[in-house]
Length: 234
Image (cartoon, rainbow, N blue to C red; front, side):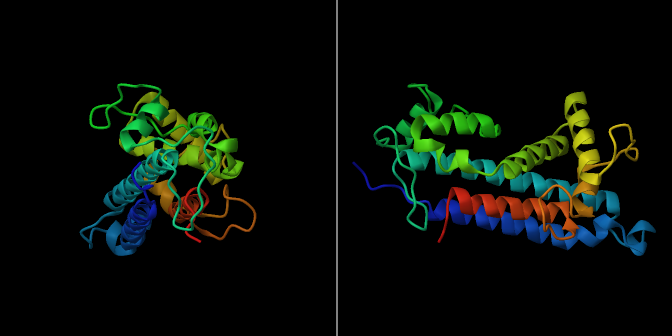
């Protein structure tokens, strides 16, 4: 059997993606909030454009997170350990290759990495899958409830950045009102965008002791904390 795959590279790839997204947000944050010069057309990057960039940076972050979860899951199935040396207890024998791990995780003996697709969006589905292969579904099933709820919100924000279907718009409006502390009957400004929500500074939704900062940075911190839970480095 080949050596167990390491997760150091997988974790570093996520960390680099989160850093890149965070750097991009910081670069355009002031423009997205709307400086006097940008609002009056004295800067080339106007608020609406900057907010779209914020949304795209968030999209990059969520995609990187889902890639990370997939990579960790299938490698844990092969007996891999995190950079700290931790690994879940397997309920069945370790998969003997990456292809074999995907076949087991998908339940499809004909699964081909190059041509098939598995969704890693629904955390409930990930937990169900984890409980089949890892004792107590660790580490996926032990992510705190608050983090799971915010992860679902992150997916809905991502969906609104990428799509404009009535369902996606409706879910985003409901989420935005909750984040802003509005009542369901309240009305958001016309054309309210994910970028506007993500630059909004708040202490809501992320638990007691949350600092006042833009929602983008709250979610960036969420992904970093969850990465430490899923694939600890120390």
